[in-house]
Length: 112
Image 1 (tube, rainbow, N blue to C red):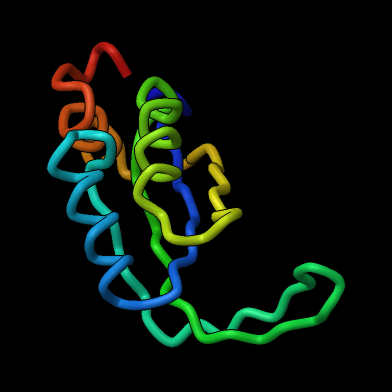
Image 2 (image 1 turned 180 degrees about the horizontal axis):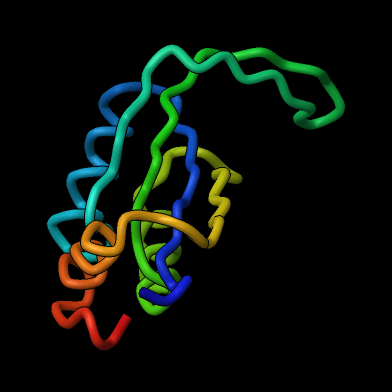
């Protein structure tokens, strides 16, 4: 299976926004699966100050072919002014799982 499957990271301020984004991305076939991890402590510099917040981390499984559409939709749904969205290519994984990600997002594993 090609390395065109991506794992995307995105943080959200609360459970409601994380659930709304996760459910929308999967329902619209922009993601095959989204894991929601609550209670992530994030420390970052924002507008000149160091800030620490509790956030929810989304682990989004998608494909390179669907990434731009996913990015556009996520930015439209996300409450942050500057949402985190980082995509990392999957180089090694269980081939049937990768095929499932392709099928769940594009409908055809061969297009992945």
